[in-house]
Image 1 (cartoon, rainbow, N blue to C red):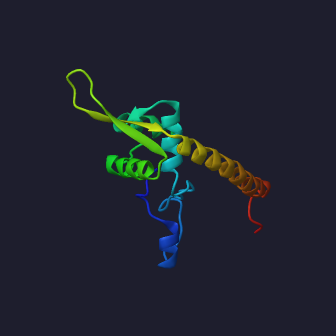
Image 2: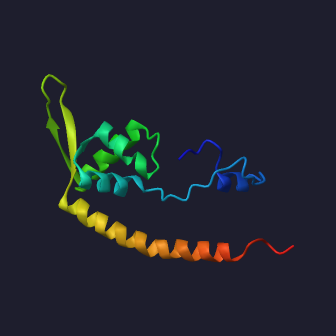
Length: 136
């Protein structure tokens, strides 16, 4: 999800008028990469570049490899995932990442919070959809 078009909140503070042609609104949580990576690793242990391809289904079409590897190192430091070096026949050694028990617990907590937040989002959308347009 691209931020190329601008950030409404920053521009609002600068007095720039809002227009759908000029801004995108990203409602995805800022810390979404950690649970998405863990969920993906829970399905199947992966190398970093393979993981990048697999998490694309969650809206990370063009994730920066550095961003993902920093997140993986942080998750490993926190005990949410672990890695080990694997060597293939004739290929270079690569880190294979997998989710830990602590990562599973984190995912369970995250899923519960998502379920609670989904109710908030549903209420917002129902309220929005209930009003077809602003009274003139």
